[in-house]
Figure 1 (cartoon, one colour):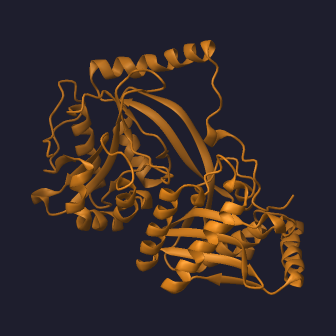
Figure 2 (tube, one colour; figure 1 turned 90 degrees about the horizontal axis):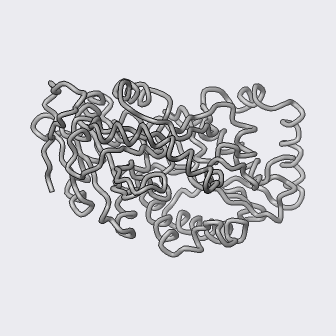
Figure 3 (cartoon, rainbow, N blue to C red; figure 1 turned 45 degrees about the horizontal axis):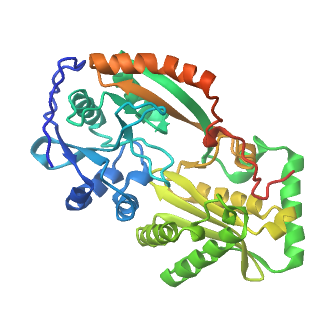
Length: 401
């Protein structure tokens, strides 16, 4: 379905001179735009890999898409795609019966920054806000979920957010590695000399147990073998326990993992690294590459060797290789904010923020204004638990004590 941009009587924006046009599509209509969608992904202001077509399309094939909508912003003549904003229509907001639109966050999406053409990001975001103010879905509230809260994308978002009725629900930092210096120099500013010597000592001790080697998957056959080794290793650890979300515990998730990994390898967008002992993996790391950044997508290690900290040793090797990777400037941990290992050896932080925004209408302004009070009153009546992503991680992934 194609929906023209309509202006609300309460719109805060002046008409855009960019001649950008907006289309609202359902999930089944996206396949026709995959090529220009990927082109947009490759030149996006922020390289959000979880919104690239080869990451999104397998999700759509396995989930209910009836409440998913996709705002596509086209440049003049519809020749280029300038913006891609995936949305989920929800009937509840903060457990209240309030219709809203949320930036879509599928299970393996760790940030919800929309894809915006770096050369036309302002025009694209302006067109989106115009559309939101008169959106045909009957929603007066926008929920950002895990929106990026730093860098050039955030600076631009703030320009359009200022003056709007909004409420900050929560924000949190998560570990970020900036690959600007050789690993030894980087670690000298992050951990003590004693800890660095301990890293080397544990690696030597592990090498005394058997043949120790860092390996990457470099062929399609090696990728397939790596995938099966990873699924088995992850399932054998704490993630394989009830509620642990090991891929192997959920057939559809395992299929998704295999699909995107093979496609990422085909595109040269993944680093599959293993620490092996006598040829058997005891720690494995899946790292996705996007633009000038990388994402620590998944990690597993053999808990029988936890006293040697295989997770830490492999993490240091990943950092070393990312630092040498041409064009890669940072690596997002995709981890909980109080991750024991990564918060120790990664110095920088990335801010993630969830906010609610009014669409600019009287109803939207009222709803967003009173929601904090309603939420506070609800907590008095029915105290809630801390969100999962704000809880302290209880699994050290083999880090040093």
